[in-house]
Length: 546
Image (cartoon, rainbow, N blue to C red; front, top):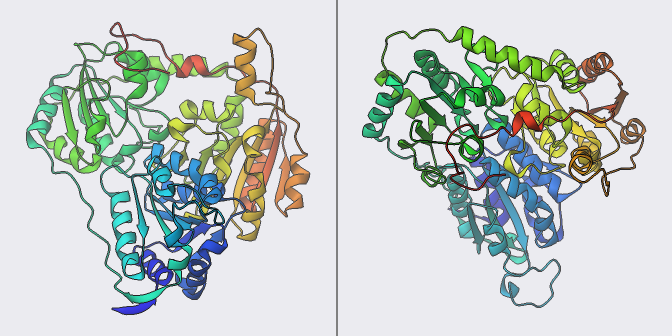
């Protein structure tokens, strides 16, 4: 036992759990906490943002880059409301983010007195965008609450958690115990289910594997099973890089759609299987084997033939020796035909494809690509080559415009050894363009590529195509992005072609300082017919669609 303040105990517990960087925006409700961080010295660093939303997204980016828990701290009321979208996104992306939130004086909580930043039922609000919420009520609880929250964030389906602490409790001193990290819980493997899965996959003539973000730590196992079964591996967005997209069995979403109609067994690993179940269709001739850490996910649309609730890697390792060893006929010719079709479809997507090729050429093989919600990002989800796990980040089903720059800053802060490039549109980038100041202040060397069509481009296209070209609220007035970036001390470039973009990006990465590349563009061709593929099996959707 040691005597320390609640804030000191919380900081010590975070350090014991391996959290050495905190993101946040200071404010009076959390002053004792920030002082405790300062007095902890080199053991932990505070990266302060210019907006609470950015602090949350930076923690999210760091969690995505590492797969490990990260934390941010903001004031109550408007502070946490500003950051709430980052927690919502973390929830959708299964990211272990801890939100530390201040509170008004403990005796006044939910009394309606009108204290600074008072909000009714803050914990109830947070419960809608997190897996777990709790209040730290005195110093002795701080270590226990932090340990419990981080264990829950990382056990089972990873998701964000939140702790609040009152302004008068952070600085209160008492006898405390800093516990060791709580053990993480994992479900026991179901041997019977594994055997049944092996039987289905072993006798399948046209097996298919679909991977999502939950397979990110199981690339070696996915590849081994794919090669044993000669089964193509389909990825989209968060599953990109589970196995290298250049692997002979790796396919993108549109190519996988062409195989869906004739597949007789599907192994779905760490994926909601959402487009397949809601758009492509299911029927009695398709046996689905699902491996997912979340038991609730298994029958959200339709009960699979086999449901294995487990972490992907150990489940696949247990499954592999149960599969038949006999070699299968190569599907190389079939897959070559699919790729030829896909390349022809992609060829019409210009200038997106040439710009993506330029980025891929300039970005080192281990560089990290972050996409905001933009035309280049949509194309990248199905076409950008990804050589390994945690090298491509997409905002998941929330698809929230403007998440990208702060998330990329968090990625870079967590992986300073990697080049990190953000692809954003002019609309999305201006959501957080003020965080250029944060990048400069903390020397976070993200390169932001801003494709500027002076519009919310996707909105404009929808209005053109579906509403008789009646345009409203889609056209934008923008700054001179180069001058704007330079006013913060950011290195800035302008490129108008894929060739000049490649050169500018190479220069920007080599500087190892915050940089921006402005790319003026016009309207780009529609990619959605390649992403939203039609039904090919069954009759009625088993659940809600887009």
